[in-house]
Image (cartoon, rainbow, N blue to C red; front, side, top):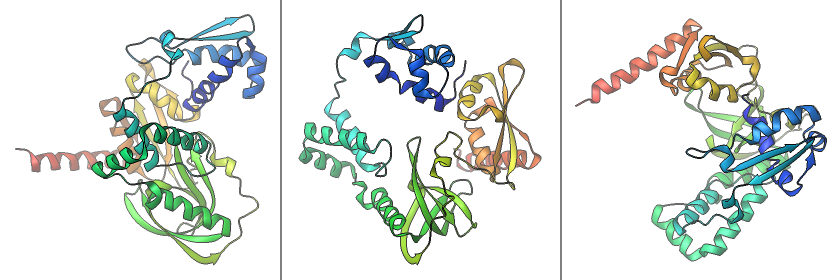
Length: 326
């Protein structure tokens, strides 16, 4: 069974609960997840056995036992002692956490802040500042953190903001005026959701792709119909009726990974373990770049315009190598 990635994350988040309550019933687990006891009994043991990292096997980490309608977890022996980081590892982790903090109020914000404090206490702020100067690291207060703070202020005051935003799908920097409605933490990325004046519709923008934020004096009222929960889901992208459908065929070697990324409605099974994924998008180039990451395990099969885009990209690459080869 290939579980969707979002569902797998949800099941793995149950590990502390299962560990703290040996013998918890599948009915109790199902109530917690909002599924039936039969579904929990069928899926969870298999999900919890997908924790192996080569060269280890899954049972080297977590062993899951079921006795009638109850679940018992057993951790490997090395889980009984905390991980010991070297000074270099701890400093690297601390600087990474400080460079891209999550938005306040995001699900992981409190845990990240607590981890930062523990690392600072163990390392000492003087040594961390010295190391940060050596590698040119800066606190996020002047970059990501300041943008989040300004967006939060705009949301509280219901004031429009002007953005310089890099759109990866079009590979272009654009200026936009946005009415910010909410900040969303989605799978580790922070997005601001609001009405975009450039396209006259509700859109989401990744905060790490915002070059600058300017607070304006123009105010707005957030629509009562706005519901942030629509964006807290695995299929974050919301295609418009004008978007095109690009078909990409993946060989068996890439099929299992691709299955985890998209909803089952977008995937069609093919012979020999291959699959074809139908992607709704407003940018053929984005799908082409994504499919080329899989090398010869992926082929854009349609429409013709998307296939011509593949040829144009490959011709561009070949031209570059011809120009720079020795």
